[in-house]
Length: 161
Image (cartoon, rainbow, N blue to C red; front, side, top):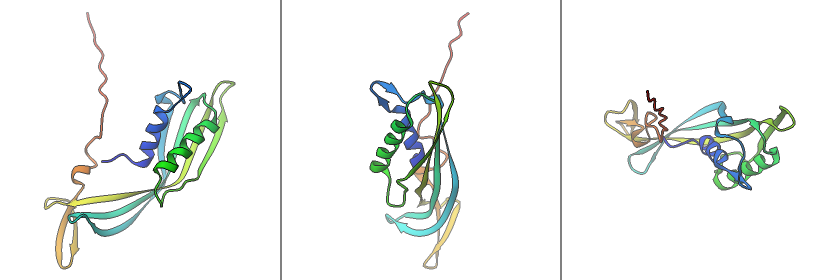
């Protein structure tokens, strides 16, 4: 499956640098979805495709600990949204800041709404059935299957003895 907008935004923040320094270490980022809502649809697209649903959600990103100023993080998020948000996505970002100590804080950012399309393709063995003009069609995720990893990282440890 393609990465969600929330996953793409987190990946952008993890790789972002300011004056040669990362905003935080990759392991300090966490993200989750709140208030997810599905709206059904049944719009044919690209001949054999189907816009099956629209998924709306709030995206939350937490960075803890974070040494970068919240204004810097918020600016990166704002610029990402200007470039990547679509018409149904929110451009507003709420944030909270909890001071850990003199050098770090926990930053939590909430993007009020992201909208994602759930697109299926015709597949005679697919698990989803829908009737179109008196004919039953079956659909599946196909190449964008939920079960296919977009990428993975393999960590190994060599033991000599």
